[in-house]
Length: 156
Image (cartoon, rainbow, N blue to C red):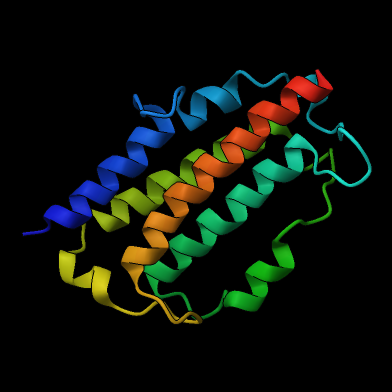
């Protein structure tokens, strides 16, 4: 049986587009964001909304690639992409939302093929297991969604 993995999948999906305890789900918060303000920063020391979104994409993709067992995109590749230079011609809010949704859908589909034993395996390039990685991804999404909601209020 894979009760724990199914619970993690349900928690991930619930925080993204369900009815989470903390309020509006991640996708609803992101979809409510005004694309006209996503490149603005509250100040010189802050990240813009678009930077936060692509940061979330980077680490969701890291989680997916680790679950896939991808050896080409290692930790260094994702660290390089983290807080990447944002090109408004390429990095649009709409593209980012689609990428975030796709990477999570791909991750959930792949996790559906795993068992609870998988959660005990150690993540390559890290010293923790997949249970920790997946629960961390859920927490990471919630944390940055909260930042996005707050920054949106500051720049709108």
